Image (tube, rainbow, N blue to C red; front, side, top):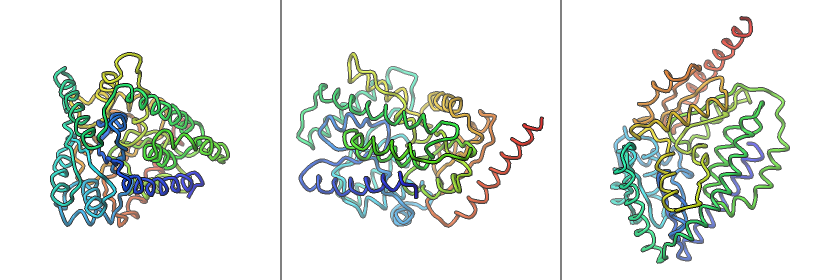
Length: 378
């Protein structure tokens, strides 16, 4: 394990203990599933946001199979298995971005006593009516959260939270630039750990250790020039650590860019807030979510186009979770759009197929190396 990841893992462990203590004092710990739910809104309502992804594993996926069909998406099964056994959340905010996540709300409500709110995220994005729907849902969310936290929502508080999160976005974007370097200074695995920790700790706590993080990065050795890989597809969470390990095994390749539900797109756009802060936040979330469920989903490809141009990858690894229909559906479109070697991996959280994935990834790298050698000869 890298020194940076070891450091971030300890921060995560300490934060999880801190959240349990805060919940015991009466603080509202709000678990949320989707980027459409703005963390700044949750905090402005007096709650602590935690995205449901950082404590999932293959054991929870197996536990989730007891409650829902085996052909449900791996993330939904793992989330259900985790939440049935875990009461660290006061309430949960779901999204209707995919049908399986929408139905997950029903199962968790039946099997736990965790309060929940179903957030209706719009799927069409070419009409003013859908923006109005999104606005109405945010208002309902504010009403729900403030009733639970007994806190009054104020735009001044929202502005304060946006300013803090913008500081965090600026710091993470600086790390992202070093990830793109030749050779990359930060590995993709380190970056995903860092991004996850940043959201888990929140701006104030995370930025307190920013100097230590930069020191870890400055002292890293980068003697090799590995293959540059762009990672796209389904949500990346703690259960995917073995996949990231395989992709970057023995420093043969490094993930220099990504477009996933929990990747760099989260921090890509610092929010402009000089005028109406609420409306600006609303529009920013509505326009910039890189979601395959959006119709039309132009922003998904516009963001990917820019990232491909910046990172100049040698190949694309497209990972879809088993039974994650939105991302599976987009795989062919991704492959056809970019004239770059492409590998599609469809897998779950089980470690039983690690050998097969390794074989496919290594063969993919050999093909890229062979093509690069042919290009040099020409």
